[in-house]
Image (cartoon, rainbow, N blue to C red; front, side, top):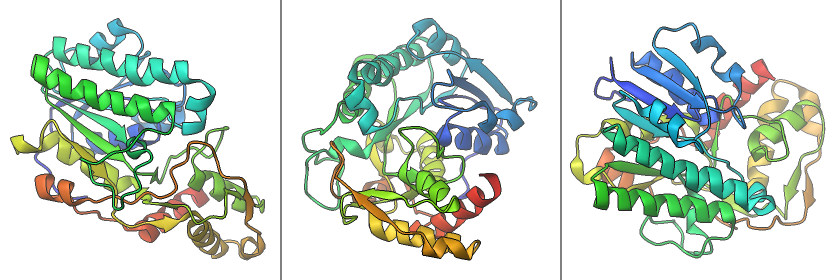
Length: 329
């Protein structure tokens, strides 16, 4: 991981800190001697992700829901920075239940902005989403050029960006939005109806079950390894370039991989550990409603304003992820 200005002694709230990305951020911040307050209601996060941190004097767990303003005020009390990761992810979940998705992703985000403003937090960095690009067919995706959102989830993430801009304008609260592109890596949950594709496929291959791709597998994604995401959060948190603030950035690698190619790579890396996996067939089903066909990020803006350079290309990250899952699943 690249060097950043020291965070030693800084107080930082990580919302959704028991989730996949949040727990990785908590771990990294503690390794940098920051004081971390993790806010999570365990709706999608897991206690086992942060169990090893509970005995650390630098770590504090606040169990609560971002839909409650008082909880958000409590979370932000006396802190320097907020890393806002809490959200209900998943396009299909938002299509099945748009009301709860909106309540958490928009209402909860607004509560955190208000609390950050009231508690005079210096900066709030938040998880935005590549789903904001919607039906825009332009590749690579450039921050200033978006289309019509294709799901309730995408709408909520775009509304968050609008609120963040408005809180700078109205209350002078500094924010940075990170549009995550298909993040994967250690601690990502393979379980549940809305599990992300990579951990879900890993688990299926390990059980010698055939994974099913939505469509013919030619849809492509800018799969982004967790260490690149940690780097972008740290850069957004610590940058002293005032021009870098109150902007949104693609958080990605700048490469794209088809879903079929990803599945074949996974099978081949796992087959090195269990030769039977090489024989597992990859199946195909119908395309999924609300899915964007192709996703490829331009990372020029993040490079220009924040000096971001990805440390892991897709296959390097995938190998590390496979090693982690092999040990932990």
